[in-house]
Length: 248
Image 1: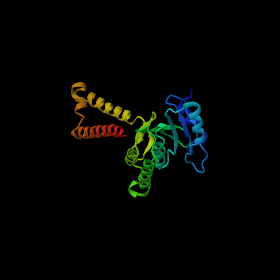
Image 2: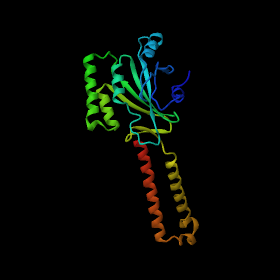
Image 3: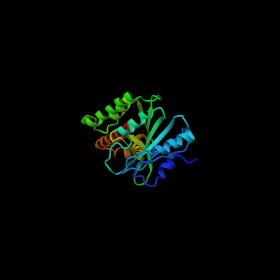
């Protein structure tokens, strides 16, 4: 069985959104329909055929892609659009989880999954659906809702009965400011760890009790002040990088 990652990364045209359905432990089945732009369109006939022939009345999972240009300033590639939220909640009796797969629009590389979990599994009635449509309209109309800030999307999803979870792939993290899965900066902590160890080693061998007065006399007060000042700066920078990594 082909993994979901391999299937998504083998998409011929990653600049366009694609949709899939799958059983909880099954293989992705593409259900992308024709569209006039790059937005995803679900081919309902394919989904109905798959349900009848494979899944039956059991709930299933749905997946669609969000293309992302790594070097652009595009925001919110990992976040659900209002239309994504409305589609997911409207099919809550069928879809347990809708996954958004962010991938590089040039290479097709998978960068992370955003899971939209339906809290309810009953059939939505018309009155409730209309109410959720109004929530979407409010979100789109008001300027204060226009930001791609993840928290605002999460609040909207909560009101729609959906829980959002972020799952970056290895080597990536979810950036709370841009709403994208972005590449981690490699090795910065290791570099500063090495620098700290080097400074500590140099200071140790230059001590009087180890090398004698010849070298220790060379160490002026100004030299020591400069040395300790640089060491403190490196320590502060090191812990700052660690905190930044945890907040991502």
